[in-house]
Image (tube, rainbow over all chains, first blue to last red; front, side, top):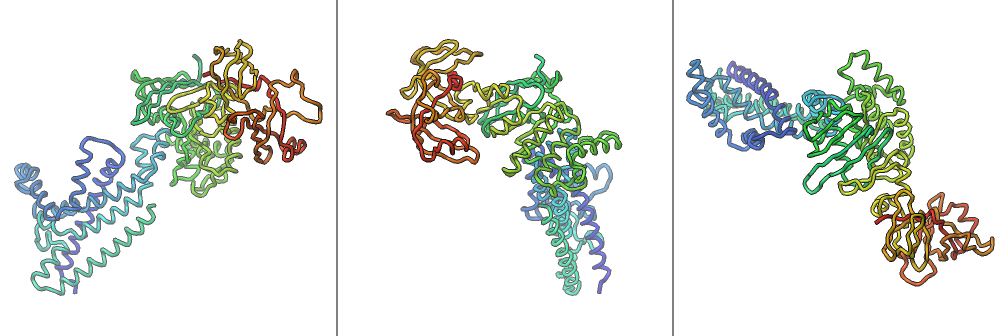
Length: 222
Length: 374
């Protein structure tokens, strides 16, 4: 029943989603804090850039990623010239695509959670000798924890289901960049309805689990 | 100037300008005034949470802010802050909250200090509870303990009793008073409640519209509001308007509702308005004397500022009655349907049978008519 191609796709998808979620935590939580609590030049632009993948067609986001990271891209060309390596059509590309697509979900959820922390608590920490950095670690983030976790769960779900941007940047190479959604697409195209059904079922169950988890965390966040 | 606290702050915000200067010594300074007068903004400037546009803040000789380049961050000010609603850390226990400002100290010292503060405030039994498991009064004590544990040079309290129900407020007001006296830390407390201000203050600074309208020791403010507007902000009743007949450094004679009244002129700031100029004054309702009818007729030599009037309405305030009296003279009454509000204890109300007998003569000692400088 679980053929090697199904297991390959599943293993790849989980690896990509876990890494993308980790990258999201690394980039998204500081970003959410900065957007919620700090003023800095270009804030509106950063907010826009992070949120845009939420509303753009994923293929458009994927196209921008090619322009940025492709072999002839703004960042990709110098990298290729220096090392002879390009991220396009590797599984790293799938991680990048999933990260970018999932980021708005984490940032928006985490930002709302951070903004809902009473500012007087932070001020109290300042008057008690805490720096802003330590106040963030000891007061703000712990109190926004459930909202941040809910955001991470949503980001994980989004990364798991990413299709369009991944296809553009990473392609659809079985065993290398064909994640579960891409494998489903291939299976339907080639008429392997059994494989398609199995993958659809697995992805549906996983997404349900994730949504329930996010819902529970969200409910506890308030 | 050897005052413990010197505050001069100018802060412009959209639609509001805070421009205040005052000093305070030991004990509790109360910032009193209506909501939106700039009291909390002042506290935030003192704590370093808000940067003034100009001014100077000095605590115990240490300059915390000076527009010429000093701006100590809140972390370095040694100023404790009790927030409105307390702002206790909801994810930390009572001990965690109280010890929060001590985390940079050695563990043993931190624990010893926390325990001592908890004991002193009667919170030892609640050390491992979370703030949400506490009553309002216990929360107030935790907030005080958290701010006092670091041994601050100055303690700021923003409406510390406003989060509580009325019956609890009264007992906690006195508890707060005891704690502040007991600890001896110089404190600045914000309130818009007159009784709270009187009960807790050594010095009262009256705010209105972003300015200080008067700063004085508590007792002085009670008897000598600097102006009619201060008197109104303080909720003083029977603020009345008359015309000057004659003013000398000792006395002021004035005409009001057809009566010739004599008042003591303020010895500290002899006020000499020319005759026929308008003058504001106030009479405390509890300082009006009703004249008993069973002791013969009133003697004008003995009873100063003698008048006659009718009780038009009365209200029971539990321990005392408030009577609204209208003078027996023609013309519009001074305060709507009445001229004077008079307060008498329940016992007096019953002995004199005021519920039945509505016509009275009364007198006001010249020392009880307080002239308000224009």
